[in-house]
Length: 130
Image 1 (tube, rainbow, N blue to C red):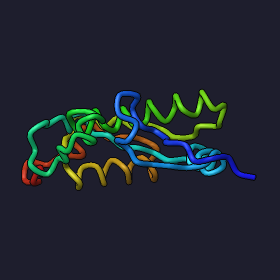
Image 2: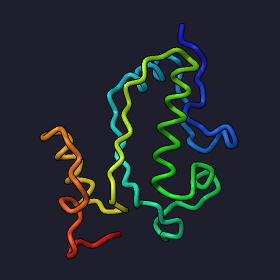
Image 3: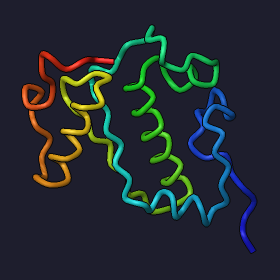
Image 4: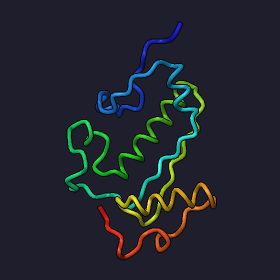
């Protein structure tokens, strides 16, 4: 028999903000999956018109970088509280903002070269920062 669903990863101040509802078996599978969350440490804009600004989103943090850290830290705490394996990694990408091409370069180097390149190998002057 499976356990009742739990709200996973929701910040204490707003338990509805992530909206993920999984039973213990699915939580265990999710936390055990080797997920990598790539976060550009300069993706800190709080006024980007494409940044979700609903109350639920703002409860997760003011920027994409803050939200990435929050979801990782909270999921890790939940796994510890439930005594579940946790195989996620938070990969900080130094010097990169909201730049899909630079983040793709970082992910490719991480997977194929086992490194995160310095910002001068990731961001180019002619690249458009979204």
